[in-house]
Structure formats: structure tokens, C-alpha cells
Image 1 (cartoon, rainbow, N blue to C red):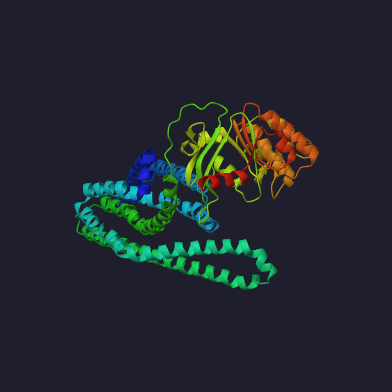
Image 2 (image 1 turned 90 degrees about the vertical axis):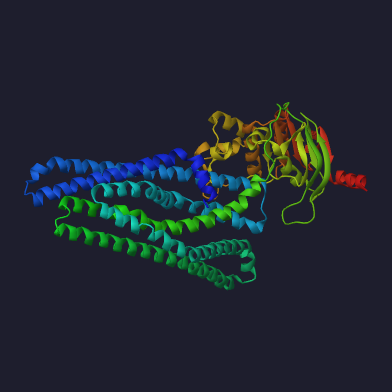
Length: 550
């Protein structure tokens, strides 16, 4: 059975695969021509006693053929690398989107990390080993068999007889190698999960002086992973050794047959030498089958692990077509229920709210009443367990992710500071003129901070660069929203950690931004509540909903 990812390769990279097949055929033809030229030169110089100068034109042809072959091999390598890079990038994007749209529990974060890094990277072996071997088997071997049949039927017959032996032996080794490969992936997952847990609790272990004891547990995880990996490599080396032995014996058998017929005068030296030069190239794909076979089992295991996670993303609702939304839209929450993964108690149950279009709505309430969760649901970060969030009458979670990103701007409680320049952190890797960035910084009350930076917008930020306080980081998130210019703005505690004067200036900026937009703010600050057009106490609302149900 063909693995599903090979159908994807064919669908997405059909042109690349056909181009690689053509280039492999050209490479084999160039090599065949080069070996024919070499055999002709040896025959002319050593047997026909011709001068080397007379063979100079053939030497030039030989050189050109070898140079052409190297150029074609380089083009093949470049095409494979590009196709592999694009495919792995698509897989990682799907995994990241899965992590954002369907948040995993903390215990599953290490698994997602393993899939996005190790498993996705393993799929590169398909393009570097497996696909080239398959293409060689389908193009080079038939081409060389035809050349052998044209030159000498006996050699072609021996090659044809010895050809099926290698796949048969690989089939016998398949079950054992598959089991060992699966154990290696389980050990890798255990190692990643163990280190993840160790890093999570390391401060606590330091406090209770148990960090040294955990070192032995970490060492055992490393030893288990090393042992299972070596078992897989041992099996791979065994398969490669068997294939090398088979191909060497086959070449020796054909060489003896050619030698005997040369002595009997049944075969010319030029023909026999030409056939001997081509034999290693003919059996080369079979030698590569050992590596390709090991690669197949390893990538199959990795692809199966990825496929177990990705269907969760594809099980979400299909993106449906929508009529054009009025801008700004109202937000209607209808019978919304949501429960975090691996939790039994719902955070929200049967929630109904209407947030009017073009108005500033402030959500308030006691800590833990679900304000932040509700805002993240409106941002489209979490899919609701039941019910839905509607922009006017259009269901939010059936919209295409790109459409949601254009409509909704979200400022979390703790905006993330990326490793990069200030401009990259502002634009989030999009493009905009420097003047717009400076204007956003002024409106977010970061102009004084900006003036002190040594390199302006090109100042590195993050752990290895400029540090930002919590209030500066919050205002940086606001500057991002200003640059994105979304018709719906969701802000979680935008003025927390700010003094009264800065808070007043930020509220003035929000007042300017709110014109022609639907704005939802989580806050309990009196100044923000006075700024609102509409205030909803979620704690009282929850009690009213529960009383209605009763």
C-alpha cells in the first residue's frame, strides 16, 4: 500500500517528480555515453596501439559528458531540497495552526514539539533517499537493462535474474526493523517529554534540593533513547551489508562470465570493458535500497505520528462562503459552551451576549469568571465546545483563518516579545513604512522609550537585546493593533501596570481608535469603565444565566 504522503507528493509536486525522473534518465544516459567513450579510448590506446593524440577528441567528449552529468546531479539535488523544504514547511504550519486553534494540554506540548521538529525534519529523508532511489529503480535500471540487452544478452539475463533477490531479502527484514523503529520513536517521545517536565519543575527541585537526583532519571532517558536508536542502526547496517554482498557477488558472477567469453573470443574487449564499467551503476539503486528501506520505516513512523494529530485540525468545520460583512460588525454570542482540554468542569456554559457594533464594550467581573477565556474565544484562538460566536449572523469559526486575521485584532494580557528588531516585533514580520511604525509608537505612548534606543527601529529586542517592562510590552502590543488596523479590537487589560497619566493618554488613543470599530476591553479600572459605551459584569451575567436555566 502506498503511504498517503506519497499521494500528497504526487499531487503537490508532480512537476518536480517528473523533472527529477527526466534528469535521472539524462544522468544515466550521460554516464553510459561517458563509459562508452572511456572503453573506446582504452581499446584504441592499449590494444589498437594508437597515439593518445588520436584519442584526444574522444577524451574531450568524455570530459563534456562527465561535466554534464555533474551539472544534472546538482540540479537534481537542488530540486529535491526545494521540494522537501516546501513540504516540511507546510507540515509545520499545519501543526502550529493545530496548536493554536485546538490548544493542547501542557502534557501534550512536548509531543507537538517533537512532531514539529524531529518528525517533520525526518520527512526530508523521503526526498533525499527514498524518492531518488525509487526514481532510479524506475528509470536507470530499465535504461541500463536495454543497453545490456543491445550489447550482450547473457549479461542482461544475469542482471535480470539477480535483480529480485534484494527486494525479497528486504521484505524478510521489514517486520523486525519496523518494530525497532517504533520503539526508537517511543523512546524519543519519552526523552522529550521527560526533559520538558524536568524543565518545568526545575526551580522547585532546586528549592527542595532534589535536582541532583533527577540527573539520574535524565541519564536513564538518554541511555534508553541511545540504545533503541543503535538497535535501529544495527538493523539498517545489516540490510546494507546484505545488499552490498548480493550486488558484489552479482557483479563478480557477470565479470567471470565476461572474462571467460573474452578468452574464448566470443566477446570483444571494448564491449566487455564497457559492460563492466556500467555494472556498478546498474546495481547502485539496489545498494541504495538498504538506506531507502531504513528511511521508509523511519519516515512511516514519523508520518503516522503526525497523521494522528493533524486529523484533529481537519475535523473542524469546513470554511463556508460568507456574504460581505458590514464593517464594523456586531458580535453575537449564542448558547456558547467551552471546556478546556483534559478538564471536566466547563468554563462557559450556555452563554448568550450581544456586543453592539461600533461601540466600546467593557467586560468586567471577579477573577476567574472567564473574561480572558471569552476574549480568546472571540479572537478565534479556541473553538467553542458548543454554540457559537457570530459576527452579525455569520459564524466566526467557519470563516477562513485569513479572513479572521483581517477582521480581528487581539491584545493579550502578556504580549510576546520575539527575538528580533523592534520593527519586526511591531510588524509581526509583515511590511509597512517606517513612518507608520513611528506613528504607532507615538500613539502607544512609546515615543520617549524609542528615542533612547541606540539603533532606533533596528534595535534588537528580546533576551539577547533590549528588555521591555510589563507596561512597555503592553503598549508595544497596542502599537501592533494600531498598525494592523482591524475593524474588531479585543483588548485584555490594556492599561494594567500603567500610571494614571499614561493610562489617560492610552485611553485617548483608544478613543480615537474606537471610531468606526467594535471594541471589547477586559478591565476593572474606573477610568476604563467611564470610557465604555457598554459595561457587562460577567459574574452577574453568569448568575443570571444560571437562574434562567433553573
